[in-house]
Length: 262
Ligand SMILES: [Zn+2]
Image: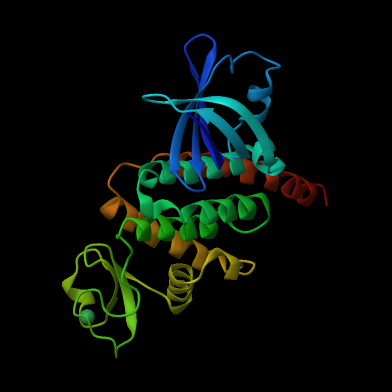
């Protein structure tokens, strides 16, 4: 039976000597693994089209297990993600998150969220904030979203939320903070971003700018929350950060050299 689907390529890997295993995140089906016969051959059309983080339209023959691609057409690509290893690594982190939730029906809205994520990564928004949005959306799709509107421990709504605790499951009040061993201070700026991200659809998120301290804080809360609640270990975010670091140092060198000369 022939079928068609629009999707984003999450990853591609060799499958036997001639073929490729391509994992798509389909607009209507979520995670969709497919085999591209002869796809490893250089110059093959399928090889040229089915590259990570491209939006494609595929026709495929459904078989007992994994379907076989019969046709693939490119709909959209993001050159900065394909050319810059740091952006590529962040895109791969998004793919890692989606691979865990993709087989669930509730994962369908994540297609639009992932497209938003790739577009923002290709632009100039801070990757750590862009990632926090995708993280909150994927957590929500699994019913694991943090509580951000009332104290996650005592449930009170009429008190300021001043700390974040993964153990309690979100933001907590000043009375509950000393009772939780993992509660970190939560700034109002970080709470603002977390709440906006948890509520707004991708189309309503404007350009993301924040002080470096706020970005670091949002990223730290998300790291700790994911480590506590995500059902599997996540690796790609660490890789993306490790790649980012030496490039930042290299970027600073010319300035210090100029300073020496003058
Ligand atoms: Zn409380």
